[in-house]
Image (cartoon, rainbow, N blue to C red; front, side, top):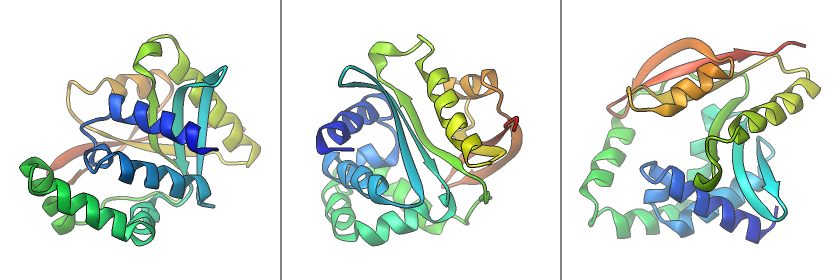
Length: 191
């Protein structure tokens, strides 16, 4: 994946998941995150493209329980710079980071997990997210992996919950983390 594709992914991530912590840390940090994930042996970035335009992106982590620790270790100075410039102007971000620091860890699976999945807003509602999951699942099945997971915030306005359920994910667990309630969903794959 080249820098042009990473810039497209960053732009879509910012548009679709702007309230997520990573976009709040700034474009530079988000680019660093995707460069790291692209080079990691534990994550895989999937994209759906039309010509050279990225329509959707999904990151699968095979070691989701260590992803953020690895990102922090590898991007420490970028993170420090991002936090120091944003934390004083964004009290909500400051409070959220504090909650993350003091929160207990949550359930982590040894199976692959969707870290991020999003579709360019121009193409949402056209089945591209479903196509993305099919691509991911074919890849997992080729590796003889029989299940995978996703965490998503548990609020009534979260459209992702219906998307996952419509695509065969089922309730597995729920947990509280950093002051938010999350659902942990699982999908079993037919081998």
